[in-house]
Image 1 (spheres, rainbow, N blue to C red):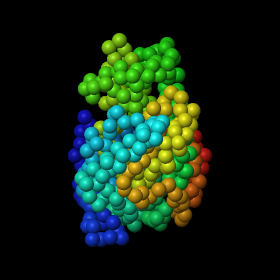
Image 2 (tube, helix red, strand yellow):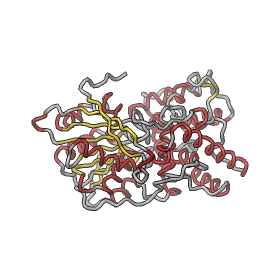
Image 3 (tube, rainbow, N blue to C red):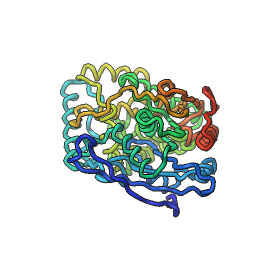
Image 4 (cartoon, rainbow, N blue to C red):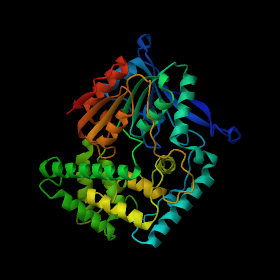
Length: 447
């Protein structure tokens, strides 16, 4: 387990639960700061958000999220500040849901009948009501626009005229909305693994499903041809399809779960291994174990998020920002058919399908549905997208960059989710920009 940063300073900041209704009280945001190691050349505060929604910026900062030697200049020149957005991590009140209520492995997330669709809606409604009873009024105010205003409160508390920002995945949506609201408060901003919140939701679902399929196919091609993979020389996609089909029949055990794994759980475990290119050999081993003579999907199911402590925050915030577009079983079935068409192998799990199917029937009204958040008048911002990112397609990075005046787009042609974790080239460009404030040009490509 990573060691805790001994220099971390901890604090809290109070923010209104609902700025339009002060009688609802306040929430406390948890912060952790690593002071600049070279105070004489300190630039200012660099706020970081590792994604999610539901990811802990406090944990990211405290437990080595910026420990790569490539990122050393950030530790030298900035006070690095991690914070847990409202409802997340160490912030209070925390979004609290009963895991067993939130996720039912027997539930069909691709219902083909009205009865199945109504069962999905009823389950999600009951799960949302459980979260609301456990969390209180914060649940109805856990949207990203509210969280973006909290960043302005943090900036003021830090005493900084401007902040720098490093946002990954969901952290790109949060950062972009903050920049849209407070462009004059942005010194530099990296949006890596970009989410385009203006994207039509049905389009985003299909684009992301296709991106997950692309990443799976690239893993399978690598695995078949590489001696690093235990499935070397085999038809890896066929092997994967067989494991998922066996899981769908209830024939794959998971010692991690203490029961048989579902096809959704197996697929989600594969998906989460695709995030880091360096984890592909481990994915090969986990997939081989799940499809062996005595199958055990432990290596896959221990990596899916359904029973994670942050899954409640992920669902609650996600349903504010990406509410279900489905009007009924026919509509949902039609889009499910398109998902299968663009992702014939990986269709069982893609993140936006999991999110939007889980929001069907969610009882809390969405406060921040998909919409444009144009950024006008900010300092130049760096957007980073990957041509083979399994979670955030390159088209999203292009869309987000197009909504930001003077944005610079860095394109990665390698694998994995975010350049910070997968590309030395992208890390170098991000660090240089954050320190010097000069974007690396409009069309930089990291190959």
